[in-house]
Length: 128
Image (cartoon, rainbow, N blue to C red):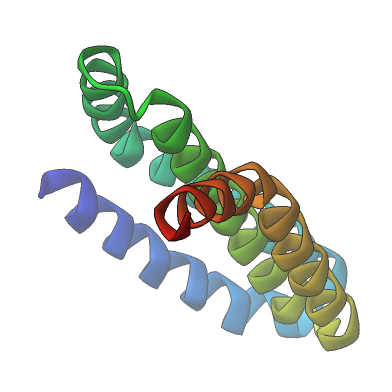
């Protein structure tokens, strides 16, 4: 909770800096956005660390280890894509952000192919 309050305060300071300094120099705007993106992405990782530990311990106790691994990888790809695309949009590069999101979606779909194959195999077994 304290970390979220600190991040909210940081976001407000970042917005203030972007509004005041960013208008004077676009170069500083890029640096401020990049620094904020790094700090926010690092915060996302620190919030997700306990979740990763929980999933890892659960996967060791069950037969769902490969599926939990796919879930975590997909979530990680989604978050990385979202943060990166938001950074691109902040800099006014909507086209790059859209293409990055498309690549992220394709990567998640490619990551899920083994799961789709396993589902198809199970459905085949059930229908026999």
